[in-house]
Length: 278
Image (cartoon, rainbow, N blue to C red; front, top):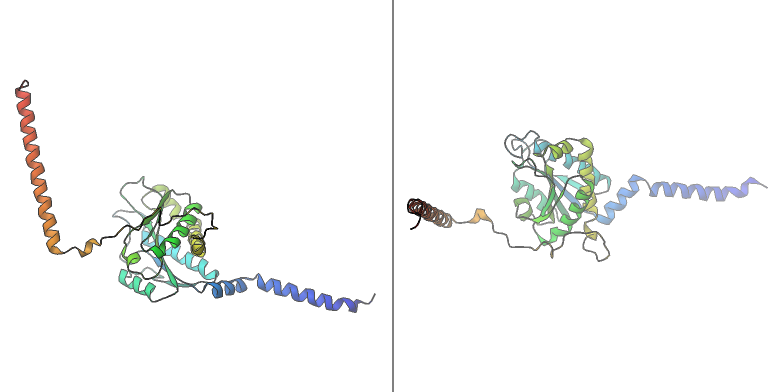
């Protein structure tokens, strides 16, 4: 049979292979993610420069760990087609208002702040994720779900706090505490390149899955406004000086009362011991 009759089929098959190869290529996938999502992710590495982070005497510098995870997160997200903006990409100090200004300069965006925890109690451990606005809760829930699912550390939950970078941003914003650097075990994790890469990949998974958190079809156990009520937040830095003076006077008055009461109790105890039958 003449081989020429197979040429059209061979050409079509070859073309199909080329199309499929391109469709599954990283470039094509990146293009699809970019066109379908069109999202900017502002990645904020906590601390930096003269701000080492953590507590005095801490052996592992938080600023180095946060920057490394942030840079890895940037690479993972960029490979998925996201536009990524870094508040800092080196060991420099960036004031909090500047970080917020960068985040607020983008409309279709989210803000992800990377931190590690610290405390004087060496036994403290676990991962926690913070948010402030209601619009930020789905992102916080998704990020926390994936990070705690992929890390060996404990789950300290999703919490609402009025941290400056969360309160002042006009876009969905979360702050992830990726473990305690004052805990010997978690500090060892943080100093592992593979662990920091894992953290970046899980945070990126949370970014990608943020829209499915509130879906009724999702079986992912996440935090909701019912389990984490949006309690009112009081900014203590706004308390007037007169209120602070009043508070100090009240505290001193209370302390004097306690001291007086303590003296009276001691006198009664001594009298009772001298005259046990009263």
